[in-house]
Length: 83
Image 1: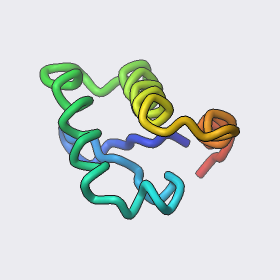
Image 2: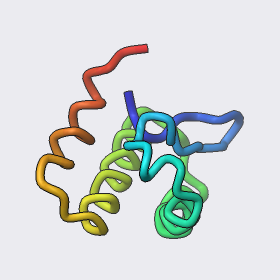
Image 3: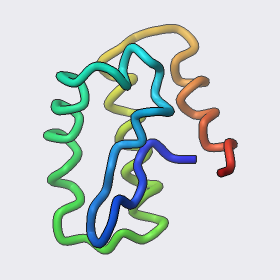
């Protein structure tokens, strides 16, 4: 599982339902995240590698903003969920 998913042709969406609730429901945070990461995707083909890279950027962004012990383990652990 990633924190970003294909939302349609050329569209990447934040998979906010898998973020901690206090982040997934924080609209200001989501807008800031989209503003920061969105430009890195413009003009790129949405390959699995690009989605993995973008997922890593989301995790890095969260960890830079919130210095909470154990948060890295939580965010990283989502990759083991298969749907």
